[in-house]
Image (cartoon, rainbow, N blue to C red; front, side, top):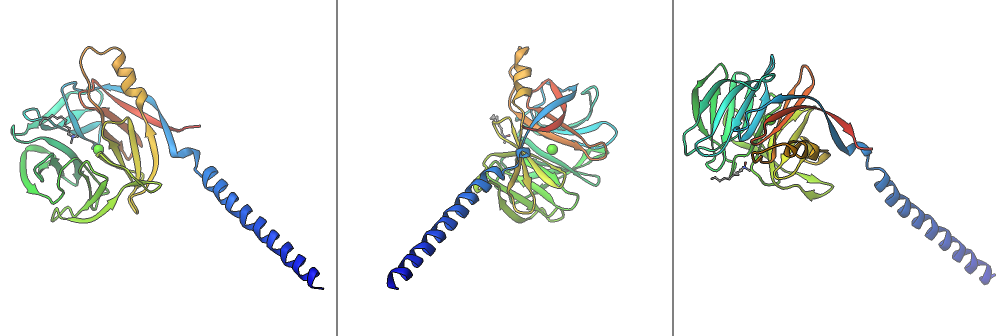
Length: 273
Ligand code: DDQ
Ligand code: CA
């Protein structure tokens, strides 16, 4: 009788072990195969336009009617400018003092808001008259990227922090650490608000991170090495990194360029198979 019970207990234990092992193995299997293939995107160039090869692009946005606004950096070469998409021609420009290094740029109503690199300052321009502007202070340690969802501002400072800023007070109201599956993503640069996500150029890479504005997690990566590699082929002049994302919301067109790049590209995303 005792033997019967002990072999029954043994049998139950073995069954439990198999069940536990099986589910834990399955879990592992699920979490691996669960990674949707559309987390990685390549890009197809659908149009290319001229871009000022002297523009050290730090901020880029699409306004309307094939008009872009762009912020450029470098001391002595910093500016905010209105650019015609098709020709790359600068229609209006406001140059910045030598002490300023232009960085991220965003448009909220008629206010064109720009941050500078290392001074925790920025400028608000009248989008219809760039010579009308005022200076402001913000409380990010550094200014790199800037974007808006139409209500609040998103800012980056070259770290892994994504800041939310009140556009009235210019105070940081929320901070999120941007991470991909738990790992911090550093060097967040130019930003754009696209499809209710925050897209960020990652400095010194050919990647754009698609960041969830709700929890700061990276939802996907856009891989664009083909753009810079294509350019390098027939260039005499040095170019710098990929930087600058603009989105035409109404036409659902995406544009990217880089610092000192002679071209600006309209791209379409394709999930990497
Ligand atoms: N940033 O755009 C990544 C924020 C800054 C890039 C600066 C690269 C050029 C450095 C030149 C030093 C001049 C003070
Ligand atoms: Ca942008």
